Length: 220
Image (cartoon, rainbow, N blue to C red):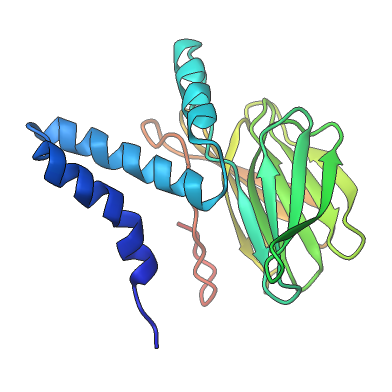
């Protein structure tokens, strides 16, 4: 039967730490602690070295650059395969068989650095990887052959792709930028062309998450 065992196990370390330390003393401390644990557990779930990612956060902050998103991953349920995107130069995509838990391939995305967001279009058989670069770049990977098929460079100002959502029925994808203000870039998946961009209002910054309602096509 369905359970929440995974969620309870993820909280176990926090509960033990709270019991030993008697918790935090301020609301600000509680928020900092909760945010830190969220980053740590997400990195663990994605097989990412926590300290390497934290160091990249501190380096970006000291340099006045946008915070790098946690490296991305996507699951192809039909093929029982997971893809992990490494924020390297160039971006590396690691393919893992989830049944045997074996690495079955590694692909270098030439010309696309610092992959930061990804999704799978199972109907068309492609993996898309957005880059945390200025301007942003998009890579198209053929899942059947596990090869880089094409890349696109977005326009100036459409920088640091940090989130994405796909409308498979309509054949379009949307990419959010980690900028101030945030921008949403629209891509036609059938032609693999950028078809538009929307700049949000001042204060609507750093689009780090995206979700699409498949019923009416609304993007949030």
